[in-house]
Length: 630
Image 1 (spheres, rainbow, N blue to C red):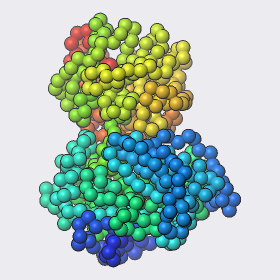
Image 2 (image 1 turned 90 degrees about the vertical axis):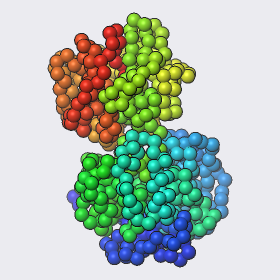
Image 3 (image 1 turned 90 degrees about the horizontal axis):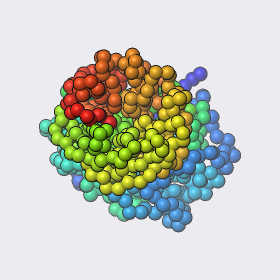
Image 4 (image 1 turned 60 degrees about the vertical axis):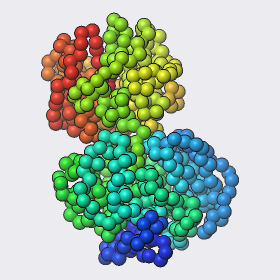
């Protein structure tokens, strides 16, 4: 069967009649040579991006009834900080009215969606809006920047300027040119995560360009004065209300709802791809963009050109996170794509496959990329769940069964650099997991009572308990063994295990409230869940299994509740057990935390997916204390 791929092209135009050329449009790379930086700093401009279909032989195109009246099943969208209202605003262009979204006060990222009448007047408007809302919720739960990004969403066969869409989706984004020193100093000042620390260390010592062209949303994430400037017809100028416009092609085989059927493109993935561009993942031939700071051809050798090897790295080219696309006929800001079906169908892949879906997360290449160009992650909850003092390093949580006291040991990689007493547990309770349930960037205690099966969340601020609430109670025979964000909504979920049947179940949580549940895989005899972490960096936490008898480890790669693959990991030596996982060396990959109950010794095995790449001795625990976290 002939496979489907997409071609994505970009162009850029600045206000005031200054043309910046068109990059890689239909293979005509010479047009990019006309790109120029505008003479006036912070002058608004526009970059255009379109996804195009290279081959349509296997696609299922909608019929007229599908386009006009088709309503697809969509699960309830996650709540966002938008409250959609039915008020209508006048909109210039081919559609006269739009349904706007009212923004409530927030201390985190807000994406304010305006639905063009091309969506609002459709019989399947609810399905389209729910899919957009679902995509927005992922960004709002992943990033904490206190800014509002204004996006107009459309569902039509042409762009706002009337040009016919050739593929599933497109966007127009407002861009600004900022001086080099201003951008670099702002980027350094915005560093908050371990990703940022590595990325800042890799920045060049000298200017590589007079300035940097970036989207307005990206500039505001860094505290710059780069306001929305786009009107509904795609033109830019002072007073324009939007940061960008996303158009979904109503004539294409887009599915609003998951799972995505064979022969159809996942609309949510397409929406996220375009949002990524508006937020800042752009590449403009002849101009220096934020991603050019992190584009490499080999260790220590930069490459921002669309020829030769070019990959995304935040540590000076030492680690290749993902290859940039170098196909001149498709988007140079996207990732290099494999043939369909793809093992890693990332949101930013240059050539998405029909029938496959994906989302961004804090650990996917897109999430890491947005993090290092200026956005702030809510927390590295998947692979950094126990950073109590918020220094970018996971910490040890110790428990004394005699006194029921807890102690936090602050760690810097394998070094114990300090400590503080935590709260004392009541009788009969144990710490089942550590995770940030209320999304305040502080890990919390999840307590479990084996006798009553009750759960309680103790909300923490560093080592201090500031509040608490009851969580749901598992049924008889079940225990809570871990917590991680399996469904990608930003909130950690309960992982339950039944020792009699060896079954696992995931309870989807929204803070302390159970909002759903799914059955997970059944463990083989003799194995237990030692920890949960995203070992293959696909944005989904995986099971780490440990066999106490053989000391073998196995990683079960998960997609939400579904086991999609597995591989053996390294085997600890005699007397040692795997008791947890966290990213101790800040390379993005979760590492093994080993414990020797006889000696009280700890060790960290640095991992790259399933491969041990190094190790370090950790501090030994004093008598009477055990390791309960991470």
